[in-house]
Length: 218
Ligand SMILES: CC(C)(COP(=O)(O)OP(=O)(O)OC[C@H]1O[C@@H](n2cnc3c(N)ncnc32)[C@H](O)[C@@H]1OP(=O)(O)O)[C@@H](O)C(=O)NCCC(=O)NCCS
Image: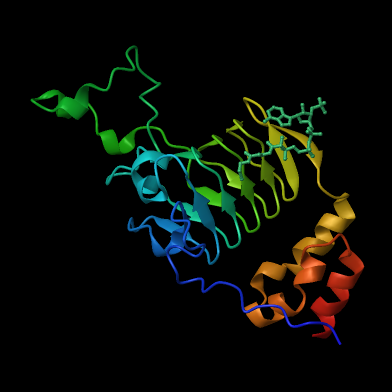
């Protein structure tokens, strides 16, 4: 008989790794209505403290911007990761200087709410964002991807890709294309936590056949 695993940490805890208080389950922590974080996704910031996530790590998240930050379940976010929500200046003009933000009559020249922005930041499940990576607005990162340390991500990242550099480029895929399709079909992160616990050794192995089997039959 296989040994029982779990229950694992309560996803509703803020600090799930007591007594270490530099790591938080982020969904219990963020307040902004345009930031959505899935269960078990954590942010670890030993230097400043994860409490500053919305202030230091989600940049240019202005009230007038309609950009969302959506992060799936079971993601690992290292310290200094930055999400650049807006902040692009006007490009279709002689000057990029943002006159209207100072008001005093300059606000009439154009509406800052119409400044260029490429779209939401959408991050899948089981994504690992390495130390000091930067994600620009308009980017979608697929399930299972890895963002290498100090990457600057300006284009979409396919599922289970490892990207690195500035601008971040795919350096390799973690699995071959057909295995990636199978893993996306399994989508273990959507299982209930009991099923995840029951099959954690498989999730933490390279036995895709085994995971596929339990996915279909349990
Ligand atoms: C991406 C990472 C996981 C490496 O994975 P790996 O499978 O061992 O890959 P390799 O080291 O073989 O590197 C693959 C290629 O990517 C390059 N690469 C790896 N990390 C890179 C980085 N941060 N920036 C630029 N290039 C990088 C390597 O030079 C190599 O290039 P080559 O194929 O031209 O030789 C690792 O480099 C990384 O960034 N880890 C994140 C660590 C971290 O931030 N931890 C914080 C606490 S969670």
